[in-house]
Length: 284
Image 1 (cartoon, rainbow, N blue to C red):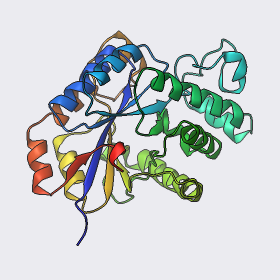
Image 2 (tube, one colour):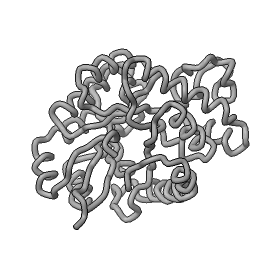
Image 3 (cartoon, rainbow, N blue to C red):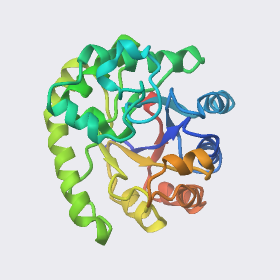
């Protein structure tokens, strides 16, 4: 007999802003979110830490960030990650290009990732896992650095964004996200052996990438009803709008709408109907 299927509903961008933090905690207290990943270098970090302390059942990992804001490490020690003004580049594209050109330095990546993890630990939070903003750890050099940093800081779980290839996508996203899904799956296959050799744990599959910003009750029902065994992670981005979140949120990502979906009482009935248990990374 198969073990009871488990679901990790993980809210990304914890620490981005107070509005995002409030939304994530609302989805934990009144909804199905049980896990969040914390951005150590963003405006809402201190507020997120306080909310995490007040909600100890929420599993908190580290959302390793190379795209937005300033580094935690001294800029002079991680120049290959930064623009000339000492900031992260603002998008993932320059980092992908630097990786392809061999200009990202593994040692600097490890330093920055360890600095971000240490800031979370110093705030009194024991991280359950790591992932990266924009899934940049699918790039081999960043993947190896993320695992190295995590293991050195006592963390042995990581997100592997391996989405089921046959799960349907919104009609207007089929081409772009279909190609993206294939690319990410291929990169997951490349990195799988290294992850296994280092003993890092991960859920069996991930859902939510193609429906990012479009999550609705129908989509959630399809995700839950098709989950029959093992551990599935559902990536979500709930939050209330404020000036900071609006500045960093791309068009099409409707954070407040996700709060409504994730706190709908019917979610619990749906999970019960399919015998699915809500967990966080700390239970893997």
